Image (cartoon, rainbow over all chains, first blue to last red; front, side, top):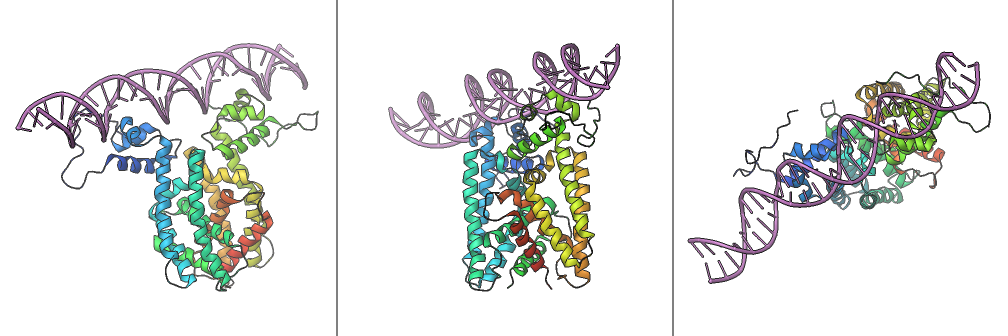
Length: 209
Length: 209
DNA sequence: TCCGGCAGACTAACCAGTCGGTATGTCGCG
DNA sequence: CGCGACATACCGACTGGTTAGTCTGCCGGA
């Protein structure tokens, strides 16, 4: 990799009239996401992030309180995205098996669409400060519960097999979602939608009475 | 340069004397396993490991070529254990659904019994040197294929639903196995065997024709 | 005497975060 | 309209602390 020192005043970046200019905070998030996913949080230096984003440490610490903050933002972004989507599916006016099926498939597609975020999510939880970790866990729990309630509703109304505790069913499914970042390759045989359909099928079949 | 050290553990001589004397290499492995699991590989210093094992750096580098080697040994230990167990179940003289069911349940129990190893396994793969990583991946692929062949056999003979690609079925199940270290607590409601039975049930139900 | 097994001081590298400094923008006001 | 005052956005050298791995040498048993 070339390591061009940013020449003061010599940069051709920024301020084009066309919409190509990405704000610095977003450039930093994007660079951090890619690097954290590739090398892991602890193996990525702040210097590497700012170089990848074409700025310096001064800029990073102007917008973020710490390296840890950057990671927290990545968590927040994915959590908000997935919670919003789940809420939409869970609130729909449909039979519960439809709602669960669509929610289960959607989280797979969303995870594959944000595979870097997902990889970071499951690998770097313990790099967050205890306080931020607690917050992430709390949000995660809300998500989990929302999903679990769908399973529970189906079991209560008899459309799902009630032999397995609903929390365990949710962990079973999210294990496979979690695992996606370990094996799914964008250049593989199956499209994200196909994978999602298969995994949702497996879940629904496992829940047949 | 790291001289290639002999693999510890194998022919380690046991010190005669007081009954509780555990050989140094094993003490180091045990300390490293606990610490890597608790704090993560990068956040654990070699100094902490040797202190926990009651020795010094000299001892560690006498038996292991590097910190990375220690991690590799942990991977090797779990891989060998699980491969041996899977082979035993897969080779049994039983109908394929029995063999798969027992193998699927066993890997859950074994994972819970070695939860620290499992946590390290799925969290620290990318901290291994590329070379060791390749080796671990190769061994794991063998394991995966052995498991997949059971699914495939059942699908071919019509006792399993053939709608889902067998590789995907294996990833589905192992996703949930890996995920165990994220949610299973020894002081929770379910015993390891109960969790194993539930997860095996889910898998087998998902595979019903 | 020799050697495996181990002690522990040492080094070279690295890194998160700080801080004083500069450039550009904007607002109030005469 | 012009000008000072303050703010925002960023730069990059520097600091204090940490760490993996090395190396010399001691010690006790064969």
